[in-house]
Image (tube, rainbow, N blue to C red; front, side, top):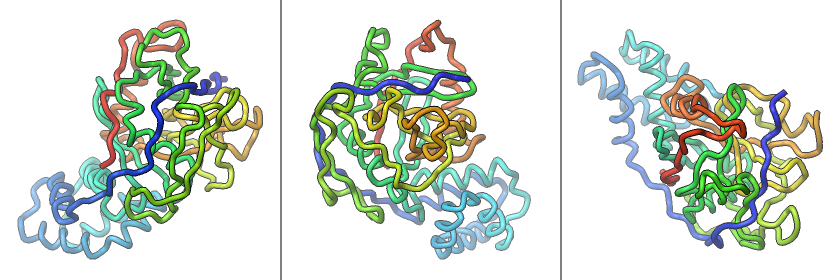
Length: 308
C-alpha cells in the first residue's frame, strides 16, 4: 500500500484577510467555450450561446452532480449542434468551469514548469479548508515552490514552504506561520472579499501553522483529480500541503478511518474530468522521473497560483 501523504508546515508569510472579487463577462466566456466546437454555423452558434446563458441554474445543478458534459451535449444537440465528439463537449465544459460560469465555487489556476491546470475550490462544501487554501493563494504562498513528492498511480504532493529549495533536507515538514490569521468565508460567498470569520492557525507543537481537520464538511470522495489535505499522520496537522489524487484512493476518505484518526478531507478538484486538459498536465507531472525519495529528478516549479 502506498505511504500516506505526510508533512506539516512550519513557516510561511503572515496572512492577510482581503481577497480580490471574482468578475467575468458571461457572454465572452460562452463565446470562448463554443469556439471549441467544429463546423457550427454562426446562427446556430448564437442560439447555442443564448441557450447556455439562459440555462445557468441548470448548468450549476449539472456541475454539482458531476454530469455537466452530458447536460451540455443534450442542450447543444437540442439547438442543432450535431456531431460534436466527446473531446469537444469536454473542452466546452472545461472552459465554462475554468472561467467560473454558473459554478458556485471559486476557480484557481496553477502555472507550473510543465504546464497549467485549473482547480475548483470547494468553498461551499468545505469552508474552513477552502478558505485557508484561498488565503494562502492570495498571499502568494505557493508561488516559487516545487512539487516535492510524487507516488505514481497514487498522488502528487506540493505546498511545503521549504520546497523553494527543491533539495532542502526538511522537505515535507513546513507550514504557514504559527498563529497567522485568515478569514473563513461564508459558504455562499459570491466574491472573495474580506468578509468572514477571523480564524487563527495553530500556535504550538505539531499543530503550529495548521488548521483543524474539517470533518463536519461534506463527505467528498478521494477520487482521481481531487485535492486533499496532507498531514503528518496525526490530527489537525494540515496547513498548506496538499495532494492531488491521480487515482481513486478511498482509503483516505476521512470518514472511513481505516488507518488512523488522521484522514484527508477533500477540498477541491481539477476541472475537466480525468481526461481533460488540466488533468493531462497533472498526469505529466506524475510521470516525471523520480529519485529514491519520491522527489522529481528535474525540479517542477509552481510559478504562480492565481484566482480566476
